[in-house]
Length: 246
Image 1 (cartoon, rainbow, N blue to C red):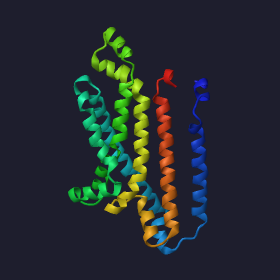
Image 2 (cartoon, helix red, strand yellow):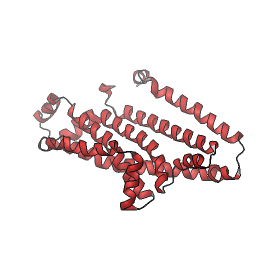
Image 3 (cartoon, one colour):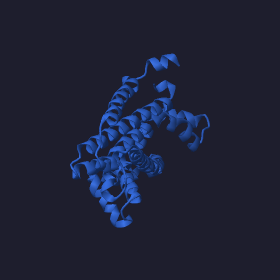
Image 4 (cartoon, rainbow, N blue to C red):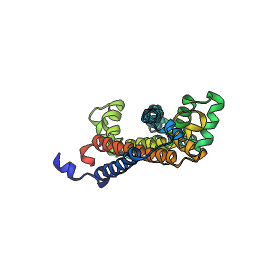
């Protein structure tokens, strides 16, 4: 256990230090700054806390849906009978990344109306590619001899998948999930354009009313949230990686 911690990548312990410094700097600025009534409408602690929670809820809801769609789909596309569908599925998923995020979110308002639901669906479409692609890559890079050995000792296809292939593919799959989470944290700020509350509300209000304090607060909080999620995802990725692969 000790030797494993000695081998931890630099970012695992350095990133939280950066987060701590930025967080202390922001909250010191927040506590020492006098805000106008207009600014307090968005930056009072109760309102700010609610906005942060709304942003996290939007991000996590989209992430859960993406994971439930992309990982099973990626598993199916690596099975021998369905591999021929992989290029089509990846190209369809790539549409979300190719389209401008704001345009994608606005497009779904014609179908679902404005608000939380349209924002979630738009974010799911936008973030599905990294997880789908990493699931396919992770499973394909498992040594075929290892799979054949497991089948040779009597494992069924399902048992081989869950006890051999997926554990070995976990680092790559979780890297895709971490990438998607960070993408979603940033993209969720754009949901304010379709009526969903997020930290983007601070940014757009700051720009439209020329209130730099709102703009700064929104940008820093989004950056902090993205860094925290990236770091937590890295920890989960390390913890879930089979010991022989670390």
